[in-house]
Every structure is written in structure tokens, then in C-alpha cells.
Length: 303
Image (cartoon, rainbow, N blue to C red; front, side, top):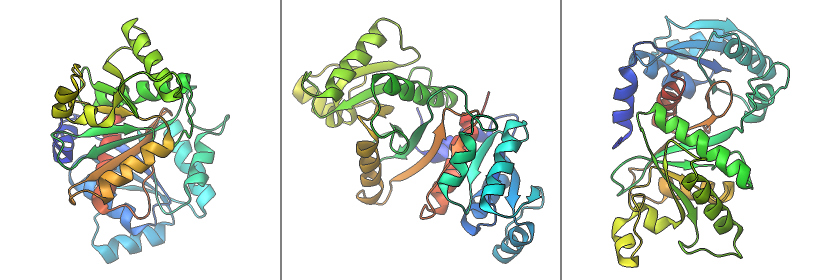
């Protein structure tokens, strides 16, 4: 169990081999700052794709040490995306990060059927959060990739998330399949899907985790609420992963945790399910959020 992101960083530092990050459109002050921080902490090695003169100018201006980084001098967002994906595909990097460019430009190259990073698996967004007043970190998925997942996609999203938690040292993470209520409602598709997922788990078709479904948000994170409602489950109050009904609910909950908490909330996020994790952080993300997203992706890329 990880209590916070600092513990996650210490865990990744113990890996015997540093992972190589490929930063696409690396001529970006905030991304370079996070990458330089991760290099300084001994977590990664950096491969920078972008305008070399601008990259070096930014590093000099901000006092960032990128002397050990390998730089590919490439101009243009699409060209940077193509080169960065090519480097991952050829084994020159372990995970990918978006710099100063549109997300769509990078993902277009990632999903290219001939030259991209497809594996045949669903690609989903995995967010790891420090939640105010919760005793450990908690994952939320999917809050950024798949708008209205059906049952098959929900299972794939769940499996992606469980795989990431395994890379963080969780042998059997607790999965809460979130619904509006913990009681089955045949008129609510989220509830129908949740019951189906629980049945798949009980049949051994979903492994490597403990699944509870359907379960409400308050029960998943608050043991006292579960006790008051008479809801008995090892997941109650101990959820490690919240599998959300859809992207909208996941996105809103994640933002609420960060923006409406007590200031201690923080997210690390990435896309999983491709040949390598992909760090896609907002331009408005804090330096810490970018740094810990790199740490998370470095952990997830460990084979």
C-alpha cells in the first residue's frame, strides 16, 4: 500500500535499471523542468525530441541540467510525434511523454495501424490520486479516453488498471466498480454491468485483484459508512481502484478531488494499453503533477 506519491518515487528509485523517457516536442519549459527533476532524482534517462536550439536555450535559462539527455533535432509537432513514436517502437525508449503540442497530434501517431504503438488492447486513462482525508493513494479509471464503455471495454479498463497497480507492488488491489447505489438496479446500465463484472470475478475470469460491485462511492472510501449501511466487503473503505461508469463521471470526480479538497490533492496520470505508457498531462498541470506522472509511467513500464 502506498500512502502518498513520495513513497511511489522512492519505490521507483530502487529499480536497478533506469527507464528511458521520450519527450515529444521537448522545447517546453514546464515539461523540461519535470524531466530534469526526474533525471536528477535518478528515476529516468531522457531522450528529447524537438528544436534542439530552443531546448538548450530553455535549459540554460531555467538552470536545468540536461547534459546527459540525448537530443533529436526535429521541428514541427507532427514530425516530433512521428519521431518520438518511432523511437519507442524501435526500443530506444520505455515510455512516451507529450511536450508542447496538441494531444491529438501525438495520439494520431500512436494509433497509426502501420507505424504506431497499438497492441490490440484497449487504451485507457489511468489516474493515481492523493485524496484529501484518504489513508492511501487511489486509482481512478477511465477519466480521459473512453466516453461510454460497454461491459467488454470496462473489463479491459479494469485489467489495464490492475496491471499498473501490480507494477507498483500491489499483489491484489481492491477494485470498486462504482455505481450510484450499492444495491442492484436493473434499470441502470452501470448497475447491470457491475453485477456482470462481479460474476466474472467470482468465476475466475477476472484475476489479480479483489472486485466489489455494485458499490457506491461513499462505501468504497469510507469504512464507517459501510458499517452504518451494513455493507460487508474487504473493498469497503479500502478501495485501491475506482472503476467509473464512464469518462464523464471519472473526469468530474478527478477534478473535484484536486480542485475542491484541502490543497493536498494531487494526480499522476497516463494512458495505458499501448506498447508503452504515455504521459499526457495538461499544460495547466503543476510541475509536481508532471513529475509524479513521469514517476508513475516509469513504474508502469517496468517489465
